Image (tube, rainbow, N blue to C red; front, side, top):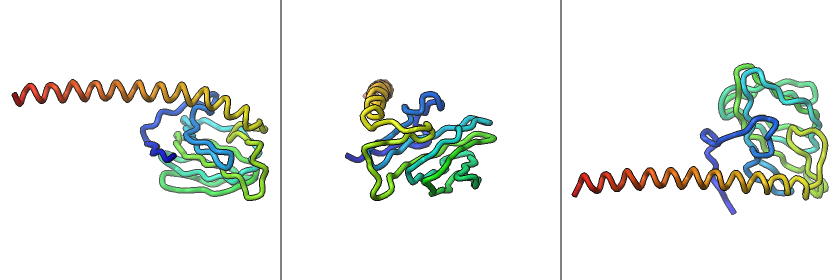
Length: 161
């Protein structure tokens, strides 16, 4: 199943609710939005996965194994496995993609910026709960938008008649 995500307009959640920022998840890879407010930091964590960070807006300083690199809008950083942390002075929005290296046991899935490991079943259960509530929220927003467009269309039709 394919999906398109609007990375600019997509609602995101603070670090404490980061599981809600997962856009797509498979045992082999995970895609999420990372939003850092001005001055916000993501604590150091060990990632066994390969990681891709794509700058959507703003700038973030990403540190991998002690080496800091700037990821700003339009830039892409590929790295890992390693010890990761992230911070932003003025705020940043990134797309984070975790990819399991070939030959790695996919029955365990680390959380991006979560520190530690958790089983895929635990991760999937948490994500299914947040995915369902997020889908309901998005569908309600979409329904409201469609209702507004319908009202506008009816008004335009009345003007033409």
